[in-house]
Image 1 (tube, rainbow, N blue to C red):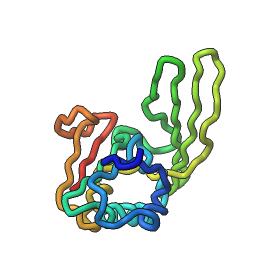
Image 2: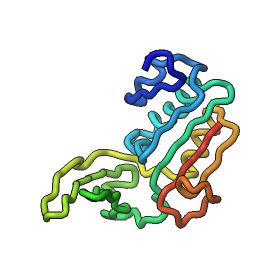
Image 3: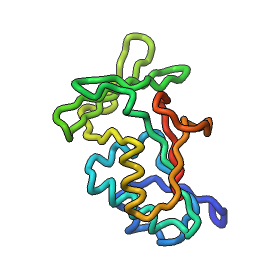
Image 4: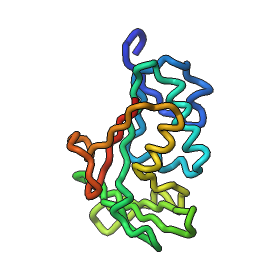
Length: 166
């Protein structure tokens, strides 16, 4: 809507700094584990630098992603199912090599009918240590991890992590 104080953009992380104004945004968010689709460590590092350049002086970057520290990341493993009233999203990750992870997803409609959403999409199972490293390199001075949206102190047994960077 014109003249509103809030704007939503859905775009590739590679395009952010090219199309959006620097030092302009108060909040940037990357939710629902979408950050894992930045499957190259150099591009992941660029993401943090780009976000820092787009944020105002007191701006905030909010990340939400699954806690991959809870999984045995050898071979193929399944992450928690996202459920709704009508469908379940089943996500499986396969580790092909020490640096290559592939995500496959399908919808279970509940009637033994499965719909393939993704097949062997490259990802990086991001961890809090990776976020801390890249965020500090980009110049973020405050990094807070919580157990999902509950804002309880972070512990390694949670399924979802919310990270607030300033």
